[in-house]
Length: 279
Length: 271
Ligand code: SF4
Ligand code: SF4
Ligand code: FES
Image 1 (cartoon, rainbow over the protein chains, first blue to last red):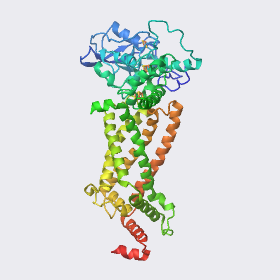
Image 2 (spheres, rainbow over the protein chains, first blue to last red):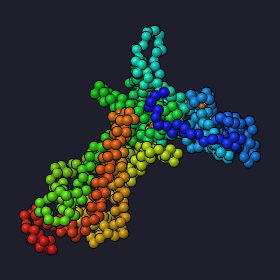
Image 3 (tube, helix red, strand yellow):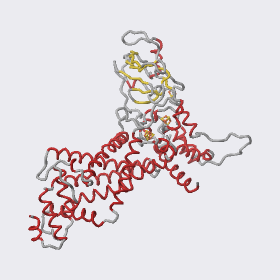
Image 4 (cartoon, rainbow over the protein chains, first blue to last red):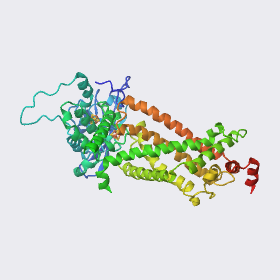
C-alpha cells in the first residue's frame, strides 16, 4: 500500500484491550421494515464468539431474533459480500461512525460485559430494510464521470501506450476504492436524494472525483478526460465540495481523496480557461 | 434564479471564491492595518506630537490616516461601490451554497469539519456584523448607535470611541454589548478570510498534495493570526480612547492642517 496512508481514524490500536470471554454484548439496532415504513430501535443481547465481527453477531441474532425485553421479532436484515473489506456492501454506521461491519471486531469495540454497540444504516442512501441500503446513486456517479478505460469498438485498437511503473504505482491506491460509500456518508455536502432525476445536479461525492482522477491519469483512460471534466465542472461537481475533508478521514482504503479533489479542481480550472479561449 | 445559477455554475462558484480574496480580502487587510494604527501608530513618530504620550500619538496617526483615505484616495466612491457589489454577491451566493450542506460535527468532530462548520456560521454572523458596522459608521444610521453619535472622518477616533462606548462620556452597558458584537464580528470575519484562503487554494487546484495543503495552511494561519492581532488592536485601541481626549487631538490636527498655531487650536477648540 502507499505511503500516503498515514492518518486514519480506523488504524487499530497497538495494544488492544483484552476481551472478556463469555461476556454478553448488547446491540442497539435501528430498524425499518422497508422504504417509507416507520423506524424503531431494538436491542439484542449476544454472546460473541472469540474473534467475532458485527456480521457474525447479526447471524446469531438472525438465529434467534428475540430482543432483550423478550420480545420475538424479525431477523435484522443486512447486506454483505466478501467479508474481507473489499466489496463495501456491508458498510453501516457503527457507534455513530461509518465503516465496514465485516471488519469491525467485537473484541475491540466491546471488550467488557454489558458493552453496547449501536448499529444504524447509512443515512445518505435509501434504506431497503434495516441495515441494508441501496447505493445505486453511488454507482450512477461512476457512470457520470465515465470511470472506465474506453477500449470497446468494432476493430482492434492494438497495444495501448506504455505505462511507467511510477505512474501505475501512484494510481494504485486510487484504484483500491470499493464503492463502499463511507466518504459520502461522512460528507456534510452529500445529502440523501431518493429521486434519480435529481442525481445529476446533486453533489457527486469524493469517490467519483477520485475515480475520475484515476482514469484521467491512465494513458488510455485520458481519452475521456474532457468529458469527465465537463461533468465535474457543472452543478454537483467539484465546486460543490466544501473542503470539510471528512471523506479522507473515513475512507477505509486510505485513499488520498482530498488530493484527488484538488487535482480535479486544478484540471477543471485549466479546462474552463482553455474552453473559454478556445470556444 | 436556479436555472441561471445552474447555467453559470462554474463561473459563479469561482467568482464567489475570487471575490472573497479580491477585493474583499484585500480590503480587509488594508482596513485592519489602518484601524490598528490607533495603537501601533503611537510608535510611528508624527511631526507635532513628538512629546505627546504614546496613546495620543496613536490617535493622531489614526486620524491622519483616515482623513487621508477620505480626502486623498481617488475614486473612493467607485471603490466603495465595487466592495459593496462584491460583498452582496459573495454573501447572497454564500448563503445559497451554505444551505446545501448539513453539519455533522457531532459524529465526525474532525478539525477540518469544524472549520467547515464555522466557515458557514462566520459567514452568516459576519455579514450581519458588516451590515451593522457600515450602516452605523458609514451610512450614518445613528438610530442604531447607542448614544447616537454620528461617525465622521474628521473626528474619526472620538466618534468611533463614542459609538463603541455608547456615549461620549464613557462605556455604557449597551456599549459593552456593541463592543462584544464587534469582537465576535471581527474575530469571525478574520477566521472566515484565513480559512477561505486555505480552501480556495484547494478549490482552484493550487495546493494538491497533503504536504502542500499543510504548508499553505501554515501561511494562512500566520496571516490569520496577524490579522486577528490587528483586529483586536483596532477594537481595544478604540475602546481605550476617551472621547474628549481624542476630540482635542483631532482639533489640534485640523488646526495644524489649516496652518494655525497649536495655541490657537486650543482656543478654537473650546468654542
Ligand atoms: S473512496 Fe474510500 S470511502 Fe469512498 S467509496 Fe471508495 S473506498 Fe469507500
Ligand atoms: S472534502 Fe468535499 S467531498 Fe470530502 S467530505 Fe468534505 S465536502 Fe465532502
Ligand atoms: S462484506 Fe465486503 S466489505 Fe464487508
